[in-house]
Image (cartoon, rainbow, N blue to C red; front, top):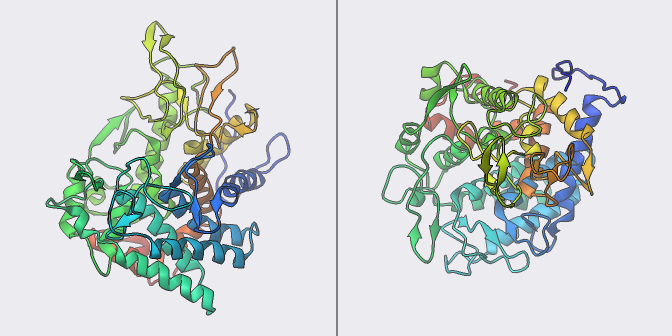
Length: 450
């Protein structure tokens, strides 16, 4: 496909169809935002994990919704009073939730089970008490508290609840008997038998955990985690390795890592934002090289990440027997890779490399839709498994995590609002400093532009 001119922030490029970049992004962002209006339980503030019938709530999707409501207010997509009431419903539910840690509770020690029944708010699927999903939930609560700053009874109560819920999380307990944070806990067996190793979306977890005014992680925990990092060279580019694209994105939805560095990144003369930019280009390079000869990979069709894919029988692809993995965290260059692209991961790279993401988004939109699902908002699509030449397999399911990332990352590109809200929080600044970050906006007074 023909490459299109690069577009930098602030430039209103216009496509052949007459739609400017800003109009296209507004449309994509609004479509993603509508998920949180359509798949919420207004009584308890819980949000469905996916559009599948009977889907439980994901506590991380609730966090994304709470971070998205301020964007919806600013963009004129919802009234401030409606956003406040939806947020309060969530906060009141979690504050009053069963924290006994039993098999049918909602949480324990301020953490929450990954998936909850949409109506009762109790644990489902024997899932784990999840520190990373709790982190995303708390980030949403703190974002809301930072935005809703009016001196009214409802907004005052909102801020009080958000801060109390954050202070209730016993981050130090999740270190268990080790140094790094554990990946979860179950009432049936206790802590899972593994902690965080290798670079991951846990950057946000450590920032909030280290910044806690009540139950903070030890400073050694972050250093011990970075000791498990892998610095690699792929396609001539040095970067901090992680295969799936979401790892290079999730923490960046809330924290502006431009120009701030920890000890690891100071040694590499890099920062985490630049690392994500490099990872984005590596993803595109992999698709251009297409070492496994999948159909449809090219300069404008790329993005291996966590998402839905076909659960089909193995078949011959480029002379080998190729398996298909259903829902999986796909990554490069070591896999798993079955030809499935996550369009939402492409969109969520916008803030790092708009010059290659904007053309890719236009290409995905030009490819058309299957039913009512387009290639960007769907959880995954696969041209290799298409039923006919030029056709693609596409999931009919929409995932709340994907929509949240689209909303937040497009907004960080358009206005930087999510970043600004979190930059001024003392817990974020304290947590990053305890992790030995310095430079950039961390050296400025709160409220100053970076």
